Image 1 (tube, rainbow, N blue to C red):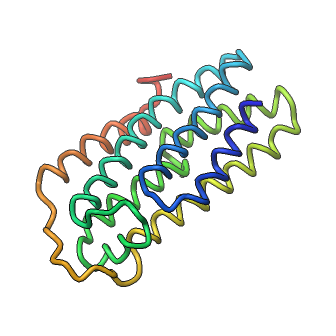
Image 2: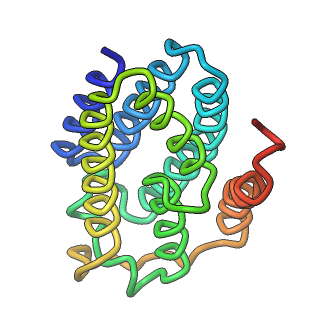
Image 3: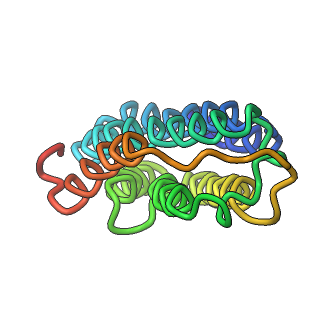
Length: 191
């Protein structure tokens, strides 16, 4: 049931036009995986749940920070109106890419470790759950790619002057990504 909820939350992410709503629904889908792992009650599933909770805490917070950085410059959260940032703020595009890669659990991120432990626990518990899990991961990759392309690529529809990024914004993103990288390279810190 938790996996089905995660998949439905993922599907609702595909329908979002508001950037912050998409990130919030993304969190719901990831917590569905955590609930499924906790309900299985094996060592691997509990370790995976712990890893995913910690990694997702940093990842979703980083996504919300990036959404706020975008909002401060465009005064809108509608994704189609925020496109074209790769030409204007290339460093922000790099942060968006890194954070989205973490969100879709690419190796060697801690999100990947958590989701791999959860997937193997789910498969050992009931082999057919891998179908729903795989569908959920496919949809996660789809909406993450959609979010990245909608906010970063194309030409900006806004004619306003965009402020450059500040050091505090890069420091804030570094403070989100650095712990993720640390726990990715040394997972025994959290699991």
